Image (tube, rainbow, N blue to C red; front, top):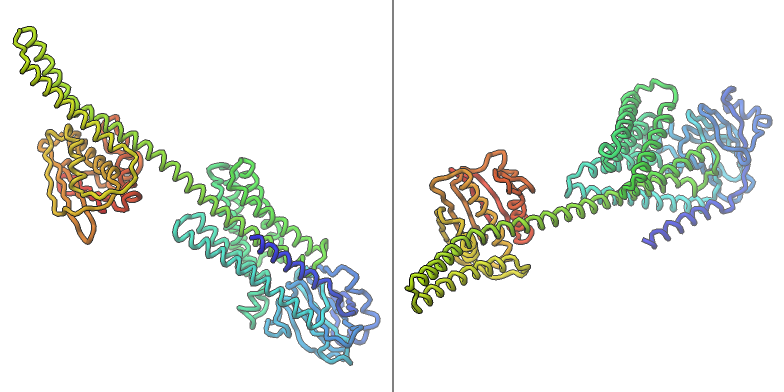
Length: 608
């Protein structure tokens, strides 16, 4: 990153240094012809009295609808000289010899191919007729405000200057293209509306900057004229502002955080849309509506970003800084237009730098927003996982309670038998040992039950070689107390082993079977049946669990795997079991969990 910054600094220092080189000594005089409308013959006849103002010393800024005559005379006839005007928004220049012969015409009102030098900035070769004829007359006309700031360069200096300018353009548009591709790839993966709006905005900025740099006529329509002027650039500018406001609304969630501000932004979108529609009709003789609405819209965008930043929204910092730099660049460019800052090869690139910085910061803001969203999603996932674990523990405790109820009753019955035998004087050593052995067997079974559940809750993330049939048998053992009146049908076509997280697969099967048991009980099915099928297809291990509980409503089939969705009618239904089961199968077991309704029931399919 540092080397790129150093490169940019060196690049502009070299541009500035080239602008400070000693140029050939020239005289450039002018007079305003807006009222007299002189021809070249009139100019030649009255030349000594007309050209009294020096363009070198006076401010080279002129109002709209200006018509000027320029007279060039060189003090140095030994160097090939080029007169380069720094503003690319110049309508037309007609160049004449001192005898009155028209040499050529250049400007936006003339096809680009007519230019001697293929550059967006007008450049005139002042040695066109040889060193013995060192006076040229230039007739200049412009519909809008114009800036005739210029440099006079030798051929070598001009080529060097052009090389650096093309380098900057390659850097500028290359950086814009890379960031556009970067965000487009993000959009392809995320399909996020904010990314889509930003991509469209980015494309419009790209087009507007092509017009601003005069590259549309230079590279795309060299045989046409008035490409850089007219209504087309204004049309794209309106679109760009509309997309900038819309991106602000979605990126900073203005509607949710500041509804009143959102209404104002929508009003501005509507007003600019009206100007966009009326733009081709040319109802106004000037660009006054554009000069009012566009700056106001940009100021509103900046103010909205600042407001969001004040609300301590971190993501707003990128938008705020981006538009702060953009506004500063626009202000400097406006000051150049009004002659408050000297235009040279350094200040002419301020606006491009502002645009590049703004686009970069907005791209970084989108990436940061995505990172925050992923972190928030991860936090929610962790919370759901913890809740699922707690829910599973609750279900396990309920299963333990259910499985211990019968053994505890048996222990109580044996204890009462011993007590009765004792009081009836029939208790013998043999019967006492037999009853105690029976109690010991029951407590051993209860201990094994606790140990089974304890091993299930161990944080064991190591994969183990096992089989679906083995895991299923363990789960059925854990649920044996809940399956007394349910017919379990198992068909197994596959006995090979697979390498999985055993405890997590156990949890998934437990969730599915518990849901089946609940559905059978809640729907009061008489002949309760759960069918389990184990098979292998195309190197995939498949476990199918189906029931005859009546199935799931069609509208709920796609929702059962959503967090907090539940079809249970009991008060303790928490609705996160199936969601976490699907997450475990997909993320930890690298498989899939699907559901579909079958005859009189539902079928869950685990594929590993």
